[in-house]
Image (tube, rainbow, N blue to C red; front, side, top):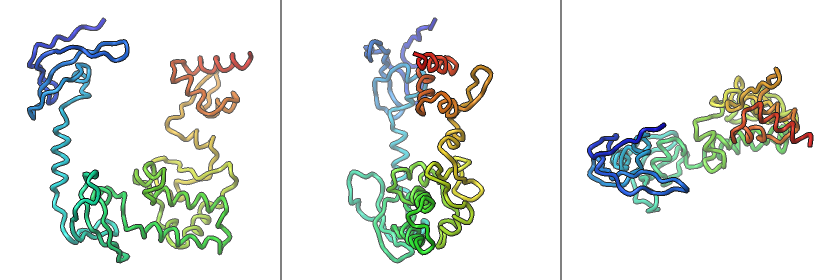
Length: 286
């Protein structure tokens, strides 16, 4: 049985000070208590009581604004270098919708380009674009060695793009997380070094897998693996024991003859792993 928390005014939750309770608001079929609060900065706002007590709301957002103002006033000097880019000068924002400061940079290749300071400082942009093009062009000659168009070459180039091309759809989960390709695989003749270390991709059923999902692409951390093997390597994949036998989730789905994710779908809806397997077995017999 829950105890009602009385609000008298003056209670403090992080940067909020409670003033008084106001009319509750309705979400779906439930009503939620709302408190009129005053932030340390002086702003007043209605806040749901559960957000106050849980710490989900700790202020009106003023601290974020202060942090942003600090970033906007950090001095950046001519000649500062970020990877292959050297600062020339700050320029007016070409796009008013972007809050990030814009600078004119000179790349090591000689090209000048206006780039967002945030993108440069967080490492999303390391050059004017020539770095990625050099990696690709250095390995485009794969046809000379009989690799262009092969499964091995396709996997190799996909690896490079995921880690270096900020426009790649999966960059955020690879290069954006700091995942890199080792020097020997990324340099000129990289495709040859890659095949020397990894061998050719066995078949379409195999893809390039990192043993440590947070590690880089390098010989000691990579292997050719099937989707089933990769699924077993995922941190989210739990072992499930049923009738004294234990397999990981992906293996159970294979043995039960159901599509991937079906078992987890049943578990996420409230069934225990054993109940989920019982349910699958029962429906399969009908």
